[in-house]
Image (tube, rainbow, N blue to C red; front, side, top):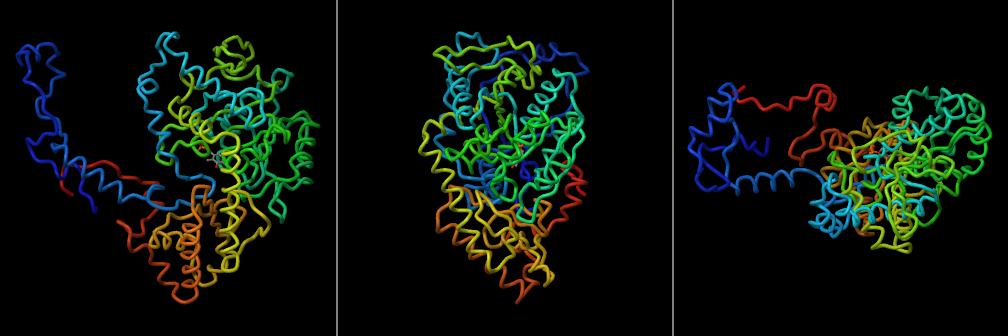
Length: 484
Ligand SMILES: *Cc1c(COP(=O)(O)O)cnc(C)c1O
C-alpha cells in the first residue's frame, strides 16, 4: 500500500497527548473494576504522535478522489460542490451541541429551523406537508410506500402491487419489496419515456401505486406525466415521485403540480450535504393533504408564527427515525435555501441543465447517444461503438481516472448497453466541462488507435485494476498483527 497503516508506523511509547499525572493511586483504580475485566497486557493501539496522525490522514485524503479535487460526474448521485460556509454554519455550537433529549425550552431555534425548512420543501415540491424524519432517499421511499399502504388499508384493501418503469433506480423496487409489495416492471419507449400503453395494461385495482422518477434516470423529462397521473388515479392508485434529483426542477416546475401524491427529496444530493462516504443523509417526504394524516409523528407544523410538534395523528404510520431526523443535514439545507432564495434556486437547475446539455453536445459525435433529445440534469451515453474495438465502458471509466477525472456512473440505467451516465452538476465551469469533454474525446480516439492503453488503465492511481467482484464479495478489512 502506498500509505502505511497507523499500526505500521507505531513506535512504542510515542504519544499524541499529554495528561497530568494520575491523582488516584493505581492500586485503588484497579480495585474499582472486577479482576476479570482488567487487561493484563497493553491494548494493541497504534502509538503515534499528533503529527504522525495528521500526516497519515492528509496522505489518505489526497490518495482518495473527492469533489474538492476535481469533477465528479457520477450520474444520479449529484456529486456537486457544496459551499463550505454551510459546513461552518452547521457546526455552530448552538446547533452542534443540541441534544434531542434537551428540554423543549432549549430547542425553539432548532424547531423553528426545522419547521421553516419543511415549509420551504413543501413550497419547492408543491406538496402540502413534509416530514423531515427519513435519513436517506431509500428511507424516504420506504416511508412513502408505508403511507401508500396505510391509505389503501384505510379503504379496506392494502393492494398487492407496485408498478415501476424499467429505468427505475434500484432502491425503488427494493423499497417496494421491503414494504411487502410485489413489483411490476413496465417498458420504456424508444424515446426513453414511460410506455403509456404498457402502463395502462398493468393498472388495475390491485395496484397500490406507480413509482416514477422525473426527470427519469436517462435524464429525460417525463412529459406525459399529467396523463400518467390521470391514469394512475383512475384506479385509485397513488403516484410516487422519486425526487432524489431535484436539482433538475428547482423553481422550474413542481412534482405536486404534475399530479404526484408523494415525493421524497434527497437533501444530501440537491441541498448541500456532502455524501458518498456513507455519512448521515436526509430524505424528507412530502405528501398531498389527503395523505397528511399518515405521516410519521411528530409532524412539525410550519404554518403560523409558532412552530409546534404535533403528535396527534391517529392514522400515523408511526415513527421511522429516532427523534426528528438528521438535524445537521437539515441545517445545511436550510442555509443553502435561504442563501440562494427563489431566484438562486432556479439558477441552480438552469445551470445543471445547461451544463449537462453542453457536455452532451460535445460528446454526441464520438459516442452513441441513444436518446438525442434535449436532456435535463444528466444524460446517458452508450459505449457500444467502442466495444467493437474490445474496449468496454468499464475500461473507459478506469482510463478517465488517469486523465484526472472520476468516472461517470456505469452500467446504469440497465436499459442502455454499456451505459455511461454523466451528471456534471451545476457547480462546474465551462472550462472544467471542456477539460472533461477533451478527456472523453481522447479516450474515444484511443479506442480505435490504441485500445490496449485503455484496457490497461489506470496507471497513475495508487492502486491499479482491482478485482472488483472479489473486493465486494470477499472483503478483507481486518488488520492482522501477525506478519503474513
Ligand atoms: C440516490 C438516489 C436514490 C437513493 O437515495 P439514497 O439517499 O442513496 O438512499 C433513489 N433514487 C434516485 C433516482 C437516486 O439518484
